[in-house]
Length: 109
Image (cartoon, rainbow, N blue to C red):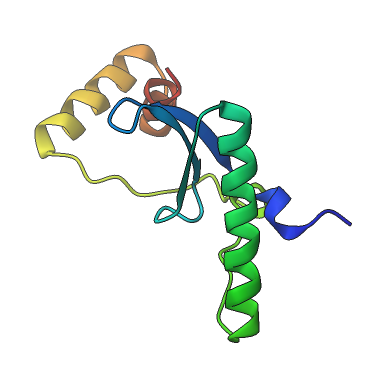
């Protein structure tokens, strides 16, 4: 069985401010790891996440669910100004599709 920290969403990016690579974990936004190489930044953030998970479990605290394991319904509500709602409704009607289909197509671009 893979360690729990293997299921999280990691990213490595260049930090101009620190002049090093920065390892990040989406599910733990307050954590980061700086290193000279991208590979070291990834190893560092993964190791740090594993340590934080172990500490949370030791203290009986909840551990964030990895995004990769979440089930998504495909539904979410977006609030837009009335004029945007009207414009999208008109575009959908002119295209002969539902407002949901129009909004989904625009979000997918």
